[in-house]
Image 1: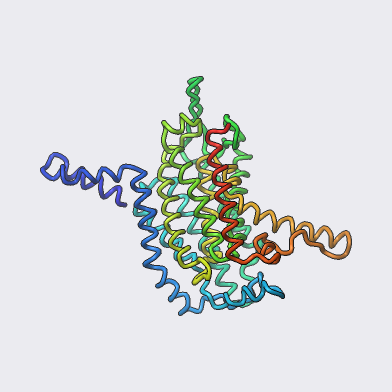
Image 2 (image 1 turned 30 degrees about the horizontal axis):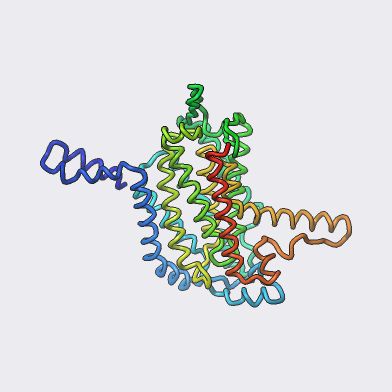
Length: 394
């Protein structure tokens, strides 16, 4: 919105005595300026709205009164009992701030609009799940297969829309003067490999669906300790802030030999808004948390990361940058699979981890919640550095 307003003012003042006074509005043409503005706006808006949203959620009694799945016998139970009554659905704050900030600071294009639409739909799904948990008072929420089908439907819609979208990407190899034009989902980049992989429509469709559904659920599984999911989302978002900026700049994309995607620079502003909203939410979500994001926020944030990765041909880099999310998801898959296999074979289910997701495993081993969160942050920074290194190490 500010971009269009600034351009309208400059065009209106052109050729008049006011032209010199409004010339600083040219800054709004620069993605870097608008990204910084989006991050600061989202942070300040979160600080302002945070106490109001928390008070509103408490008034509605949208607190975590149901039995948390992490509550087990022993010390872990004692640690989680104090969280009862803490407002959930804090994702409303994150997504509201994210969407408003993105609309204010981005230059609207199909990439931004599709990403915002995906975020809104997954927010609705998460809200329904959180509300069901509160109403049922048993932590059950929406049925897993219902959530999975909705996520898959959203992902299929996204894949079809991207396939038919007229926007394409360009890959330029300066040394050979070769230029390739690609559909947004028919080509992917492999980490540490120089050349693009042409996977075709069918594989591209499948990869898009897996990326969106997997990323959404992985962030959701990580949301179990104060500040853990939002902190890791912040770090991962920073990686894609860099990647989208490079992918949206023809010169940088050509130099680094990554696909240039027209309009991807506006996703940089979106990522900056997500970081600002995340930092503002972390202010209230750090230990001891005043509010939880719930599925309302985690499903949407995971979906946003997946969308951005798909739109710039980097779903495999998301696996690296979001390494902590992958760890959390794999721990649940391994735990459930091994338990079912051993129950069928031996009659008694056995566990690989003391508890899954894996952050609860370390709590069971005696780590304090703050220790788990900070150490996972360190791992997330390490994964982020490795992800960014794929730009040159190929």
